[in-house]
Amino acid sequence: MIDDSKGKYKSARWSEWSSTIVQSLNLKQVTQGEYHGACPNCGGKDRFWINEYNGDVKVQCRQCNDFKEITNILRSQGLWPERENGFTAKEIEWPSVSTQHPYLAKKKIAQHNALIDGGNLVIPINNHMGKKVGTQTISSDGTKKFSKAMPVVGNFSVLGGTITDLAYIAEGWATAASISEATGKPAVFALNANNITEVIKSLKIAKPHAEFIVCADNDEAGIKGAEKAKEDHGTIYMLPPKNMDYNDLWVARGAEVVQKFLTPRRFQDSVFWADDAEPILTNNYLIKNWLGANQLSCLYGASNTGKSFLALDMSWHIATGREWNGNRVVEGVVLYMATEGGNSFRNRVYALKEHYGDENALLAVRPSPVDMFNSDVDLPTLENLCNEIRNEKGEIALIVVDTLSRAMAGANENTSEDMSQFIKNCDILRNISNAHLMIVHHTGKDAAKGARGSSALKAALDTEIELDVQNESGIRTALCTKQRDLEGGAAYSFRLNVSVLGVDPDGDDITTVIIQKVDAEELEDAKKKQPKGKNQRLFLECFNQLKSDKVGQPNPAGTGWPEPHTYWVIQEEDVREHFTGKFTGSNHRSAWKQTLEAMISGDFICMNQGQIWLLAKEGKV
Image (tube, rainbow, N blue to C red; front, side, top):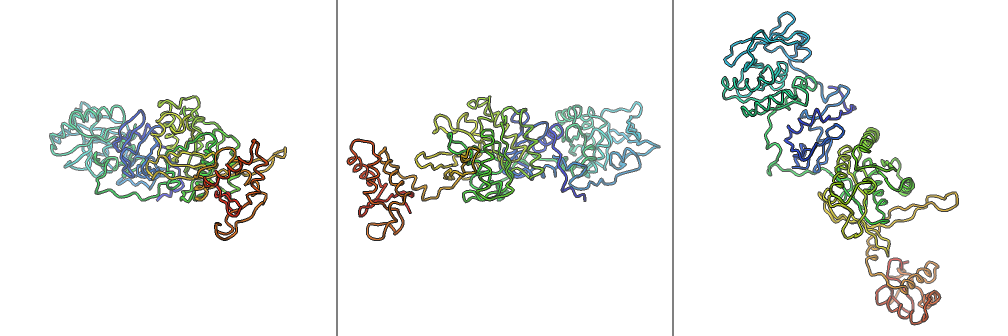
């Protein structure tokens, strides 16, 4: 065995691999350069597709999202490249390889029905009655010649024994030899592509009950010959990778790959029956109940709601493997594309590092604009960046694009055409990186209508998270408003707490904010009615100022009081005096009386024995 565990995988070139993958997996074209069908790993119908990017094949499945396993399966079927530097998944062994002739050694095949005459191979050519009609001579340098005046049309040479139930038909003798050795079945040398349909006609006379499969070269002539055979005789054909024949594939990848290419497939191979269904129990999330692996999400909200801080906080937890809001997290590399905010992200990341005390977080921030609308501008650079990160740090779990408007600058996010182009490029980036891609976005003028722009975005999303803020309490709540594959409705409430990082040259504080989860009591408190009117707000201001100055005391025990030492109580006359001093109206006595009654009837405060306490959380000791 060759140890190739440290080898690098080649990219699958579109020109070489796409047609074989499409044909083998029965994929259907849905748009130029993109084909959909059943996933070879999980069987998810229409959740799997391939498309072209920079000349390479990119694969994706929105059901299992298991890029590694998909490519491993494709590789095992000969539909994906092996490792580079000459290493393959296992050492290739060619059975009965002959070294008696340079051509046989080069093609890694046995002698089969050829004779060696001096420096030449001599291959007998027969008609359908088994009568020899001529020969093909192959010199040591590979030069080929048919015997003089030999009839070509309908004549052939059979390798690998007598045809019984099944035989493969190839254009060249070495190709037929490779196929026969790989499959253990007879293979027919048809002399050239144009002769394939005539050879089938002859074979059907000699072997009327046998099945034939055409294995033409994957070039213009071969495809034309295979199509004509299908049209004339209904014969199926199986092509090797583009611009290859099966001997090329045999030499490059060995018998197992050729055999898998030539195993007849049924259309029903692309479906599974109900009795065969089994649950997929592997973890398929980044943040459980919130973000799925290798999916597309959008976090949106109005300006200054804290979208970027929330996205960065989620990123930090993924990059360090910390649980987020009590939800399990799959640790992985995060690439955060901060298209706006620039170097302020350095302060934000530093604050997170200081707050959580983590070292070596797998978080990379790219603080510069990015064009996700024009595929030929930044996507090639991002592909190189993703490859570098993957090689040095490991697989990328999450990419954040903050924000959509900056990432598709110059395009019209309100049109489905432009939005669809943006989404397509997001899918390309996900395919390149095999990462979940989160878009940070804004609401429109009418926040009730959701994220700004074309509805094509929401239709494409696996997860949508809406962020809202209560202006009175400052509490922000993130709510999952769409989940394609996870249970929806998850919510997370938090505050933005100021973090002082240091001072600038003028002696002023340098600050940023970090996320702090709001507990259930504070959230319930915030849901209550808030005091209305300037006098009620003045009352709260006065009470809180007195409390901060330690005027008052914790509540005592006894009848009419809450649990001892639970709330801060202040004498009514102290609050009234402070209120009167700040009141700017003409009748402070009447204003005080009305305000006090309104605060009590609204369940904002309680009084007992001439002392007042706030029922809100801020009123507690």
